[in-house]
Length: 207
Ligand SMILES: Nc1ncnc2c1ncn2[C@@H]1O[C@H](COP(=O)(O)OP(=O)(O)OP(=O)(O)O)[C@@H](O)[C@H]1O
Ligand SMILES: Nc1nc(=O)c2ncn([C@H]3C[C@H](O)[C@@H](CO)O3)c2[nH]1
Image (cartoon, rainbow, N blue to C red; front, top):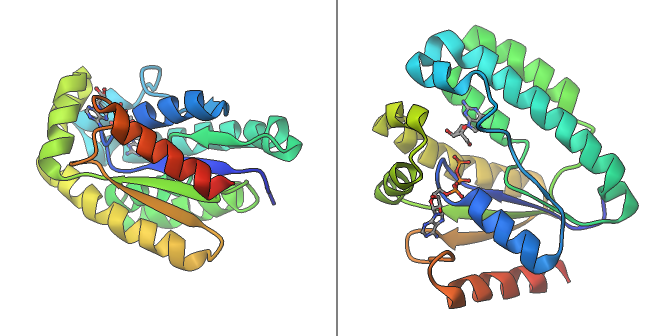
């Protein structure tokens, strides 16, 4: 079990996870681990045809995150070095439940548990909640070509899935601290005082 702070920034697609995790990593001086996007060979295909490519994509994310968290455990957390990540490993399940068929999901769950049960889990989650218009605006602003195919209904479902999942994680682990940020009203990119308030809150929590 890791005792050093392990912070995960979470929230639906485009909520600002990577942006906030990067800013906090600089502010706190913690190394950051970040998910693979541009070099992911399946994302483009997946958004073209979710049914056809979901198993490949979910397995790709799972294997990539597994390796990253194993390395993080060896090199940082086991050495008492705090870490910040722009994802929580449970994100795999949130997406898999939304994208896989029942049969695929049964197989996936077994592999997920085999791979992740003994991995270090974050003791802090910064959950960026944001509404559909905010997410659509940020995804458009970021301009990844393959994300132009994202359906509004998919995003809407993920917003609801995230609320449920964060609650479940909290209920399952009394030692987990969740800091929820209103991504619609708090603008940590353009408003310096918003970021300073979030950073001060995080510093207080991990003291
Ligand atoms: N609080 C904010 N105010 C304004 N713009 C923001 C804010 N947070 C993020 N952005 C912008 O929104 C876009 C998406 O942010 P980012 O890539 O950090 O999201 P993400 O949650 O990591 O996305 P993904 O789920 O795809 O990994 C970026 O262009 C970023 O600059
Ligand atoms: N299906 C699916 N499963 C995941 O575990 C997952 N993690 C991230 N993503 C998508 C969201 C962004 O478009 C892009 C970058 O975060 O990748 C995922 N998609």
